[in-house]
Length: 243
Image 1 (tube, rainbow, N blue to C red):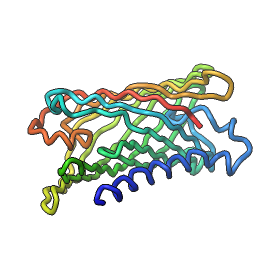
Image 2: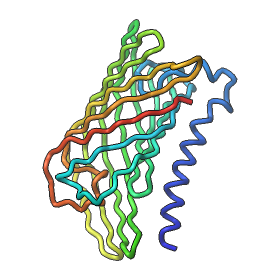
Image 3: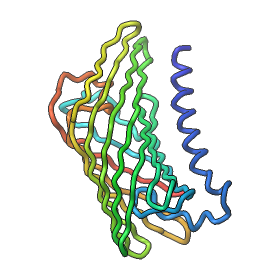
C-alpha cells in the first residue's frame, strides 16, 4: 500500500504536463502558427504556448552505478509560455517513478535576423522512490540551473546550443523512518546541450539532441548509493514531438 501513493504522484505529474501540452488546441484555433520550437530561444508572443512530449535517457558512468542498476528512459515533457514579447516561463518534467524531476523557470529572449539568444534560470525539484522487494527508500532535493542559450534558424531547422551551471541546493534521503540530508548550496558542475527542432513534414515538428553534463553525482544516481564523489561525464539523449 505504501507504493500506491508514490506511483500516483509520478503519474499525476505526467498527466498534468500532458494536459498542459494540449492546452493550445483548446484556447486557440491557430495552433499551427504556434508550433515549431520549444527549446529554440526565439521570442514568442505573450500568451503563446509551445510544448513537446518525448523520451530521454541519461547514461550514468560505471564508476558510480553497479552493473545491476537498470537505466531506464524517462518521459520527457517540455513547455514554454510567453509572458511578454521578450519574457517567458518554461518548464520540463522527467518522469520514470524511480527518479523524477520537475523544473520551472523564467527567461528573457532576443532575436536579430536568424540569430536568437535567451538567458534563463530554472529551479528543479527532484524525487525518487525505491519501495520494492522489502526495500523502502526515497529521496528528494532542490537544484538551480542558470542557463544561456544561443540559436540559429535555417528555414525549417532550428539549432540551439545551451550552457548551464548546476547548483545543488538540498538533498534528503529516507530509509524507512531514518533519514539523512543536508541544505548546503553547492556548485556541482555544468552541462552543454545541442538541440535540433525540425519540421519533418507539414506541421509536424520534432526535437532531438544531446546533453553532456560534467559534474559531481546528481539526482540521477541517488539509488546507486555510490561512495564515489568524483567528477564524471553524464551524456543524455532525447527526442520528442512538438505538440
